[in-house]
Structures are given as C-alpha cells and as structure tokens.
Length: 76
Image (cartoon, rainbow, N blue to C red; front, top):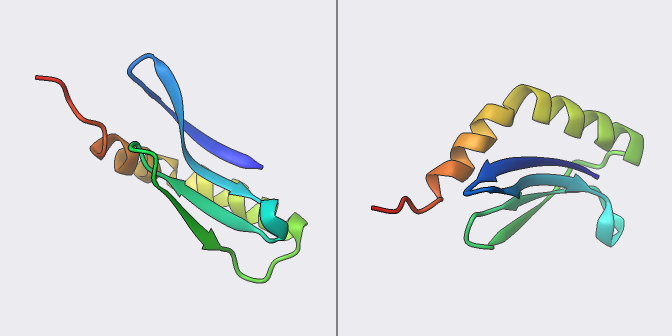
C-alpha cells in the first residue's frame, strides 16, 4: 500500500491510496467528507502497480493535495 496523507486541522488525512486489497490493484481517491472513489489500475502485476503508484505520487502529490484541500471547509 502506498498512501498520500495531507495535514489538515491538526490531523493527517489520507487523500490518495494505492493498494491491492480486494484482489486487484487500484487507487482509492479519498475525499474530505468521507467519500471514496475506487479506480481500477490497468492490468499490472503487483510489482508494476507499486512502481506506478510510487511514480504517480512523486510526480503529482501537489495536485492531489490541492484537490483535497479545496474540499476542506474553511471556518469564518
């Protein structure tokens, strides 16, 4: 499992998670309100899926963080 977490309101929140639970490689897009979108990864073996996940998060973590932060309600 590879996961990007975002620091929000004094807590870490998962924003993107790649894993192989449920018997297939997939990406969970986690939203601030609790919604989870499951996106099946292309037919990759688990080693290739891990490499893909690492590279994707390294290249796109800022965009994923920005997407998540836009969903956070701002007090006041």
